[in-house]
Image 1 (cartoon, helix red, strand yellow):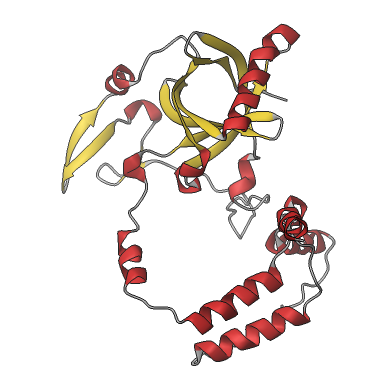
Image 2 (cartoon, one colour):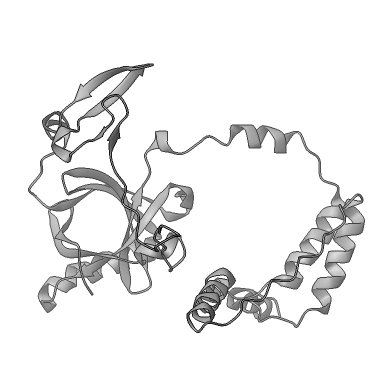
Length: 282
């Protein structure tokens, strides 16, 4: 596994050698196909130029400077040296654990990017890694810490995932929008008990085990098929228009129809946890 950062995971007086390896592909947030802009006439890739409209000329990299706009057309100039002075310089290469928190208390909205924490190659150095892993699994706790990578500080959550530790980089408190407006709207809305019962029936009818292999993209599949067909010189068929659905007026009617549709679908495998609970009740 290719690591992009190597250091240690530190808590108390314990230091565990680890490497940081991306857990997802760089294109995981978008299509796995990338496009370049071409000039339609000659199919030449277009170059992006940095252009100064005042002097009507292209500007080179050595002529650029960063500016913070404080008012229309008024800027505070920031040199690279100014930013470098603010960046935390830390050569310890350590992920410093500050506290342990219940994993259930950390909402996924705070998580940005996932990395595997790769244990050291030497067997003796792997023991503290496994020790921390099993202790966190038994207590269902995660570790909040921070580390420096490329001169930039990141907050992180270290959590167990199967037989591995993973690191989630975290957003700052000011980076996550408030949901107070949604909370207020939901609090002011009443739900009737018959509606709730029907909604539960729909959920139960569609319940199944989580299968990561089923996380596929129809868009990616169709895009790849279209590109391969174009490469072979085949004509591209126009997709059939999606039928328009009539707006739902009666919520109870829509719920009943959804329950009936869920019952007609092939019965999916129930989650293991649900089956275990049923056996326990029996």
